[in-house]
Length: 514
Image (cartoon, rainbow, N blue to C red):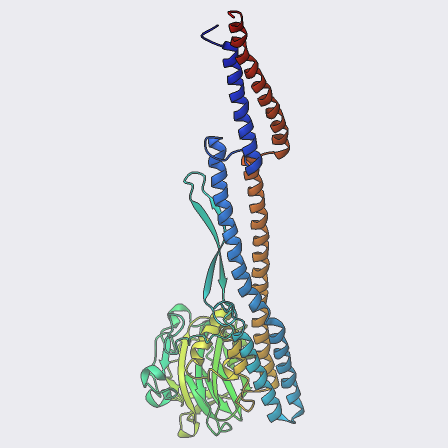
């Protein structure tokens, strides 16, 4: 008892524990954290640090979305101005019907087109212009941590520029769009000079798959014949642009009395199937004007089929009662009759009087019919390098070319008003395509804007939930810690008092020896 003061040791131990708890509680209250380092709770410390890192990543992504939203909203802001300018152009085109103030109305249209160009160029945000170009912008819009590897998996969103002001590259005007053509005559390839086909090759030889060599397969039930040409000054005299066959079977395209005439016939009774007499359809044309034309044979053995005639990609007319076309080795003529042919229901022999007075650029023939989209590609092949790409004729009757064109290309094609092929109808056709293109672009941009805003809201809520989870792991409950503080303060005081009493006991014992 004299060497060891057991009660003092107990009191000291109690004081140390009370002081330790008091210090920890005071530290939690001052920092607000119950887990400040790994020694406090290794598991909670590890999880909280990982979650804090994820929160930082999510916050960074959310800030990056503000950059994307700025570009999208800048593009979207152009919609009212572009819509109004297109409406103004449409009103000016309709006003042309009055036949007055044409020069003033053309100036109005030019000014509105220039206004649209300025608006498109002005929608740039930090170097990104989602209207003018077609470039792709890839953005990170979300991230999640792989549980096994601990690495991040990033979610991305690709912004496709609308390309309203970007010029599209030209398609090939020398390579047919599909393999399998039974005839491919291209003046740019043969002579190097567009429009000189009938000069270099006026009478091609009998060609297998075209006018001979088809009977073994039952004749030709389906054919797509396509040609690009330019009329001369005379469009009233009968002129043969192309013909194949002779006096009993064949197809041809000619000019007569200001019309483009598409004809076909298979007369002999001895052929398999039912004979079908000369059929033709006509379309009005203008002098010194470039065109594309297609004759589509879609017959059958019962002669209840049809052939369809197209000019500049537009269906002009349809002839019914069409059957199968069998071998017709009467020759092929480009820009003239080779031997003889049936025109206007009568057999016509070759003569200089029926030679074509214009120019022929391309001829391509397939023994098949095409879907609307594929047919449009054939027509585009004819038009490329022949029809003026900046003119309204290039786009009228061709959904594919209108689809491939940019908004500015379509609008520019409206000027000048005195160009070949311009009319209120054709101008409104092109302008409707331009308006549709703008509407689709802004609809897509609006969808992207909504998605970005929803993603930003989601990331905000996600970060908030993660912060609450971290807080539950490492933050102290101040109400609880305050109550503990008072308790530990009392325990410390009591321990100090107990230690004082314990230390007084040896003094009392010494007094017995006095």
